[in-house]
Amino acid sequence: MLDISTIRKQLLNVDRFDDEILAIIESENWLNIWVPKNYNGLGLSFSEGLARLQHVAKIDGSLGWLVTLCSGANYFSRNLKPTIAKELFSSQKTCFGGSGMLGGTAEKQGDYYLIHGLWYYATGAPYLTHFTLNAKIIENEVELLDENGEPQFLSFVLDESQVEMISTWQSMGMVATSSHSFQVNKQLVHEDYSFVYNHFYSNDLVEQVPFRIFADLTLLVNYIGMAEHFLEKSLKHFTFALQDELHQYLIASTLKVTACAKKIEKLLISKISISEALEKEIHQFGEDVVQQLTQYIIVLYPQMGIQASKINNEINQIFRDFFTATQHRNFRKEMV
Image (cartoon, rainbow, N blue to C red; front, side, top):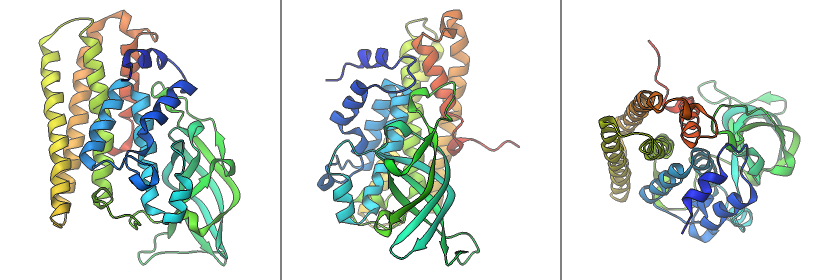
């Protein structure tokens, strides 16, 4: 059984994970939550995986965010040709990560692509064995466009030896995620290491979950987990009625996340298409939860006094981690 108290002490105010924490991540196989069992993964269902991610996020914000984003990148094992996936996931140490932004170019050269460019915010950059990126396709010195006039692009997996990390991560929270930038300087990558997000070589329910819903709920459980951690530590400082209200809200939010995931699984088993309206409903739910949790924490945090402002206080780190996570654009509401 994990010694959560010890792990939290080890992760207090560190700027990166040490070998002991990385060994725990590997032994628990957290990075392979979504990887099929035949590739040494856990092969969890959508609802099971979300519960696991929330548990990790409650232990520590940086730990949860790293596991969520990197296990989400390892999910791409399902998008790779089986021979390539088996090769890359022969070890539980395999850790994908990178950027979802479209940056840089991939110039077609026979069976290879010449990759060049700069990408930002690769969660866990120092710990990655492979970097994933999206690049615009160039053929015969011409940038290819789709039917809508938008750049055609492919996603690629590069070995960490082909990538240069640039130390740009200087945030107030989520410090240990080391979400630095990276650049690739004219590296040849075989076409077998390219992939398309919605083209799968495995046949499990989890890859049929619409990407927007997958992203929304995997991120949402991190906010819930961090808020659970915040509540737990706040109760050591004082007891207010608002904390019980937060506790009940967290229970209700967790139950609804589980209900959403199981509803998606049931629809997929029944081969019923998932409507755009349901996708929007789940996204709105996520926005509402993050906004409400933010308000609870804003009200409760000042009640803890000057002790909570000290950076060596665990609740100060939880506060910084949570509000760094709120800067992620996924649940950021538009200002009017």
